[in-house]
Image (cartoon, rainbow, N blue to C red):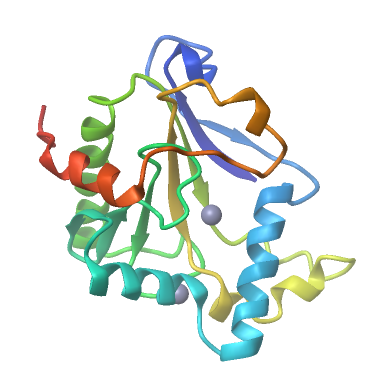
Length: 198
Ligand SMILES: [Zn+2]
Ligand SMILES: [Zn+2]
C-alpha cells in the first residue's frame, strides 16, 4: 500500500482540491524494495538501522537540516535526487508510521510537515510526497517473507518530498540515475531562510 500526495499540475495532480491518494498493490513497489533490501543489508553488517545512522549524521553535521519539531526532523538528503528534496523522519526508531503516536508527537509531526510544505511551495508549486513505512508484514509466506525477519529493527518510516522545480535533463533520465545541479547543503540553507508560516 502506498500513501502519496501529488501537488500541482506538474506533479500530475488530478483534482484541484486538497487530497492525498492511496494505492494498494499485490507487490512491493521497486523503489521500496530497493530501500528495504539496502536497509536489511546495512543491519546485517552493522546491527544498526541505516536511517537512524543517517539522521544522527545529519543532526551532527547540521548542514542539511532544514527544521525540527520535537522528535521530528526535516532535512535535504545527502544524495538528493532533485533540487530541494526533503525527508521528514522521527529520531526515535520506529518501522511503522501507523504505530500509535502520543498527542504531542502527532502535533509536532503535523506542524513540521506544514512548515516544510509552506517553505517548499515558495520554491515550487508542484511536488510528490510519499510516505515510506513498513509494508504489511502479515504476509509471512512467499518470496517477500525473508524481508520481514528483521524489519522492526532495520527499517524506519519517513516521508519523502520531491519538488518539481526543473525539467529533468533528458540525457540523464535513465531509470534510477538522477542529475541534480543543486547541492543539498545549499537547498537546506535556502529553505531555512524562507518563512515557514507564509
Ligand atoms: Zn531507525
Ligand atoms: Zn524512502
